[in-house]
Structures are given as C-alpha cells and as structure tokens.
Length: 211
View 1 (cartoon, rainbow, N blue to C red):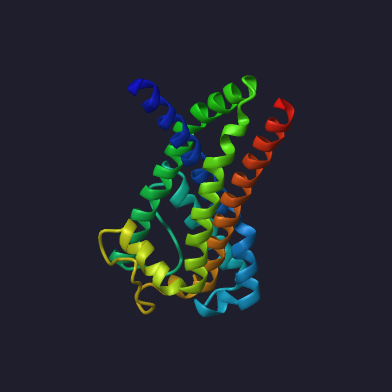
View 2: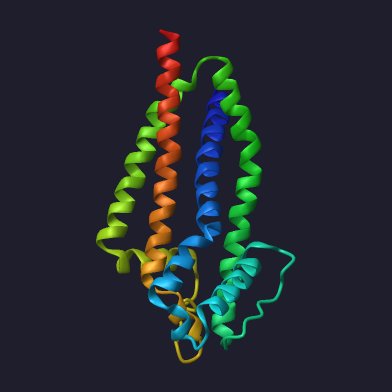
C-alpha cells in the first residue's frame, strides 16, 4: 500500500514538474518578448549598441545559457567576474530545468495515456484546480509586490549576491529592465495556468463521457 501511494505521488509530481519546466522553457525561448522591449524602449542605446546588435547579443546569451556545449559567454559588452559568475549560475539552473523536463516527460506521457485509457482523466480536476489557485496567488503577489518578489526569488535560487549588477561594471543590466523580467514571469504564470486549464477541461470532458 505504501509503495502504491509513493508511486502515485511520484507520477503526479512528475506531471507537475513537467508542466512547470515546459513553461520555463517556452518562456525562455520566446525571444519576440525581448524583441518587443528592445524596440519599444530603444534598449540598444542604453548600452551603446544598435537595437539589432543588442538582439544579436541576446541570442548569444541565450545560446550560452541553454546549450551545455556553449561553455564560454562571449559578448561585445564588458562584463565583470561577478557578472559572468552569475550567468554561469543561471546556466546551471537552466540546464537543470531542461534535465527535469526530459526526465519527467516520459513518465508524464505514460501517466496521462494510462488515465485516458482507463477513462480517469477526471482525476486531474482537483489537483489541477489546487495548482491553479496556488499559482494564481503567487502571480498576484508578483504583480502587487514585484520588487519584493524579485529579490526573494533571487535569494531563494542563488547563494551569493552576484545578481546585484553594477551598471558601470556590467552594462548589460541596463538592457535587461525590470519590466522585461516582470513580463517573463507573467508569461510563465500564464502558460502554467493555461496548461492546468487544459487539464481541467480534459478532466471534465472525460467525466461527462463516463456519465
């Protein structure tokens, strides 16, 4: 019995982790979001580059953060040791997120297919509703107290203060405004809520078919 409870909790945990990590991956990869802020706020000017050059730098940064075989961050902008160290920390977190997605995806697919085959997709309704409520509360806190949320987020994930960039030493921070990060968090929460909503819809549809 204990073994069954453990495996059930394991499968549900994998499903939630898979959806969360997928939302992170999609948010990171949605470069049009940064493109909008670059041209809306003329961010290239803030670091002495054209907006087109800044986008090129951003693509290089994303390649470094996302691909394990890109082991050096080469930007035209000056960067301090602490700034580079922070991006290396971010890279480790990104790669960990990718690994979590890869590891939990097969389990999640098998789990969903099993529930669909047994006409038990309605089991998703309650846990997904609870997940929606939790993420809605966190998103509301983020919107109402973004600075506090942003600081707490970094203190939770990083064991140092390298994320506190000095614009004189790391001018790239001038091209990464708070509004962009807020939009990224917003996109992440919207994706999670969307995935959970689809799951709940699928659960109710399964329940109606069962009846």
